[in-house]
Length: 130
Image 1: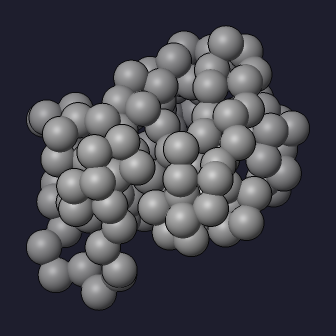
Image 2: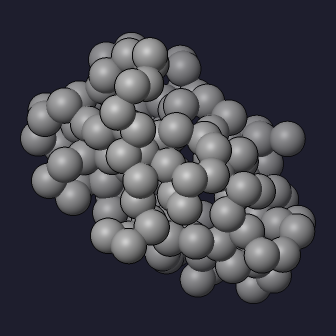
């Protein structure tokens, strides 16, 4: 699969039965629509809000560049979960979510009920996130 930002091939990283499509050049991450739920389930000490029809808020006037879904090439929508940062990209055809470098950690921290220590360890191992 090609990165929606830099168009380079992404690598698949698997850990705890969760697959991440990761761009080693721009450090972005693609999650298929259900994979965020799998990631949340894999973490024992953290629970974070999963995007759903009820909590997705589209950001209409974002000045960020529009990316295309790596699965269907549709223009992705800019969204926030429950109005919390960051603004992430979402395929309008429910293929998945794109997180630019650093946005996944921000997303988890903004939408988590518990301090995500296990999550940070997991992400640190997989994508060298601090």
